[in-house]
Length: 212
Image (tube, rainbow, N blue to C red; front, side, top):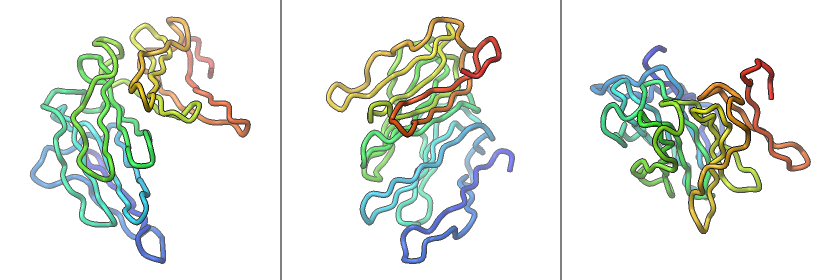
């Protein structure tokens, strides 16, 4: 499957839900998307079912595709110029609200960027939510909802675990360092989870090789 993305699509629209096929997400006649990280996110919004995919292409541009109610995939649509991000850039998805889905990645300038899709419409232009050189280009990012609000997590260039939280009234907040420097390698893989008591955890492998 190198250089291509596939999706096993589940049929949510009719009265007999189930997996109904393997679909090729790359359009012909366009530079193939790399085998790096890519995101497929489903949003159930009343009757309408929207599935979106965001990834960096082999040319370094960021592309998006979407499908509604099981229809043919639209796009890819370029959200940036070429050389915007590494072709293997990590992409993370998060639900800002019941109608708005966000996708995040780190560009070649080291800024964390966000693009959003509202009510199944077009993905917005990429907007920075950090300063330049904040993170390693293409660094792994992940999302979670501590306290019920969307946040994105990344290990910055100094090795600090950083959280950038969204406030429904004030928008994206300034990054908040959750650790000291040299906590983990810059761009280290992260995962999140919520305990039964509601406590929110972020996990990483530190510079000492320990799971933290």
